[in-house]
Length: 553
Image (tube, rainbow, N blue to C red):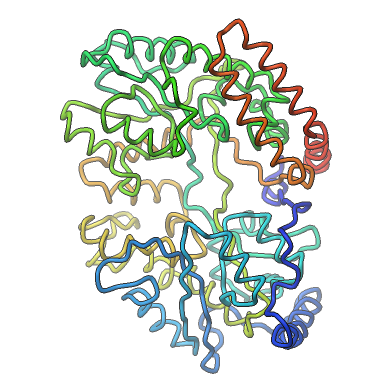
């Protein structure tokens, strides 16, 4: 697929739930809409001629004491003496934005209630001037319902939002552009698209005198040996914990899949478990393999009863029960995930967990990795914002070194030193309490850091884990090695229509297929596929097929 085509994979047929207008109620909403609409219309018409008159590159225009409200996630993790809306970084932001006549006030939204709060704020007209959400269909739905600005008139023109365009990049920016050229949001650029990876107990591997597994059969042999001949003499070992296979498709599944061999086929089938089970025979073989592991006692016999898959996995890792597991890249090191390897080594100093590359695909012998889309959150401007020009100027400042780089990395000499143009942490503990707790949530136009390359991101991240730097570097290498297939962003109206019922089918049959006796597997899988067919799967795939046939021309 051409790069630009891939970047513009849009969920154009998806609609958000009943959010018409997205303005304030009654007369106030009507007044706000009537005031905002002429400027939006003027901007759209002018954009077509390439002359909007908007000045949105930071420093090009001084505003007349404009106040912007900006959404920020509240994770209830602020250090004593600070809040997410009142801290040294908020002060820094206002110091810099004050130079161009803009005052910034933050509106806290609980991270755990992201979507519901944003929907409520939009429907009641109480949204901030700059808002964010991770759900494509929700944000695009706001625009389609007339509730948010087309940002193209404020970004696309020559001399407009130059810092923002440089940082985000055209390919990532176009993810939030519709077929008419409108920008319904700014797609925040990921510093790394590394998604998930496989982890194993290196100390057990060495004690068993085995090599790092590279094939499905070698992985199976490793799991069997860890369970049946455990080097630590443990009798309660759970040899493996693979990603919640009712919802997610991890590296092990990709080693079986057939559609992953072709980029177009992956985009058609690789969006979720349902489409893969229905259209990819390799996914069937993955579940057959899981059934084998289950019947041989190599996975948790009650895995499907766990309400919090990740938390249960963490507990099993720290207690030393797991020989292998699949989770997010850098998971065994990441402090925000619980510093699992550090905690395990407190109980067992000889224990070691490393990441490994995905297994070779059973169909062509290649290594395939799943990657996130190049964007994370979507940043958008509701029509209730009185000055979208100032809002985009703020986003442009966030894309500068004085903006986003400082917010994410801190101040040179206090938080980091520069080595080969990469910020290297001075004191990880100090940064954790002073900067790290809020930096991701203030840096709206990026996800996971202000970096232009994966290499810089990995090196800078590694420096925050003294003593474990090599682990971090290897983690990101393994999570991005081989042929990367990115998460498809198109879902389609048919998936929206059928997804709830399909979810119930998945909940029932994934458990049946994994936990049944081997002799019943084929019958259960056939029933699984028939139930998917009965719940609209042919229509879902046909819609996706039509979309990607046009895209891959």
